[in-house]
Image 1: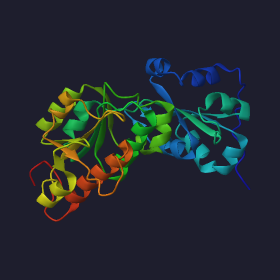
Image 2: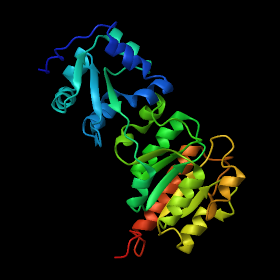
Image 3: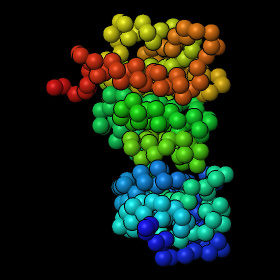
Image 4: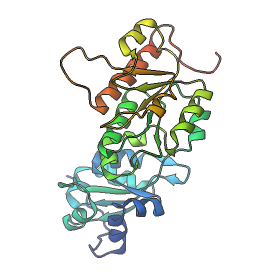
Length: 287
């Protein structure tokens, strides 16, 4: 037997529903410093996340079916202090940005971290999204960084909005797992990370350094930040010039290139493996 649906029904004409619906627009998200997390995985991660302002999840819209299917998520949301609304399919369809809503939509506080905080933590592995414009790619790279054990992700001021619903969905909950800084000029990101002892690697298909050769040479064991560029034209020359090395992923077959997320996964895992190998640098601070 499932848990009863939330006891606070909400009308499709409620101001709460209207406010949640407006979070689909970037200007409203920025003004309110709130965003939407959709589906059980994202909402489950949001429930367990706390930021400087308290619990990240503020409100939860749940259909009766979803509340019965995921009673633990609804119970944890209530316990965290979030306002839980019993929502009809009509309400969920209006709030959700997906074609087939999964019955749970959370309203969350912004959770990005100041870039200075990331630097103070002395990161070993960082993904820098320098000119990434596609929200799905941004979320997928964030997920790859999380899986590879990266310490942080930085989105520059030339990249897509972290809180775009497509970015949030594509991260599959990883948005809530590691620090993310947003709106950092690429020059500031590079200079700050370099000053923190991090080697700057620009990922580019035309790079003069080969990733396999770098691994063979043993140069990948130290703290590193990978800079990833635009999906269509890569990194501009002025950004490549900021890096300590411009590295290409070798293409051993006949493929013309790798897409952004695949290249990011290969690069991040290469660094992660090198750092975890015997003799690899696990910290930039003296032991």
